[in-house]
Image 1 (cartoon, helix red, strand yellow):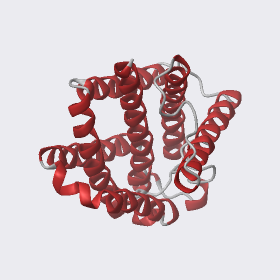
Image 2 (cartoon, helix red, strand yellow):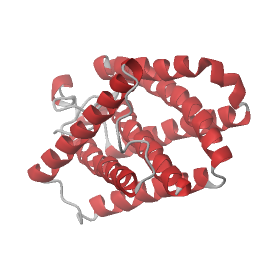
Image 3 (cartoon, helix red, strand yellow):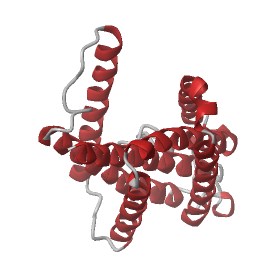
Image 4 (cartoon, helix red, strand yellow):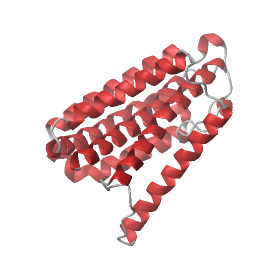
Length: 241
């Protein structure tokens, strides 16, 4: 049970053991928790959208807060019922602020990004449920490898730009190659959704504890937020051209 999502690592469910079926996580329960987290994200994003300048001085704190809450959730899975909603609220503030400024630069871009994100989510969920997309071992390893490559490339970009003032190509460029790179990353992020669906399904089959519904919803939210930001970046690149 492996996925490219850092929140849903290789032995996530096997490490927490199994419980009786009446106390175990279910797919429906995880879907309900995902909907709750999504409402938290949307609510916080709308709040930040209406007062973005109030959050600008605290942007790094918000960014760091989401990262810390994510790490706590990953390493202390039993805390997921508390930390996952807090993570959703913090990420919602981040999304609201960033989306506001993107919308100022490129009117209409946010509704396009939101539509494409949810369209991708439901299309892949339908394809997974109908088994049009099968999660084979080669499929899983390919997506994991590509996700790791993207993560390392982004990490190198952050280190080089922060400490050496060197801009890594493709990430921010609106050239044809830069746009192609963003399309590639969007595809990889979308395919991670398929792995997350499969991972959660196997967790339910393994009778993982009930609190893992919150953890599974958190992992899915991590991928969904990543997908939204990558689609937003891609649309911005095409607008700049």
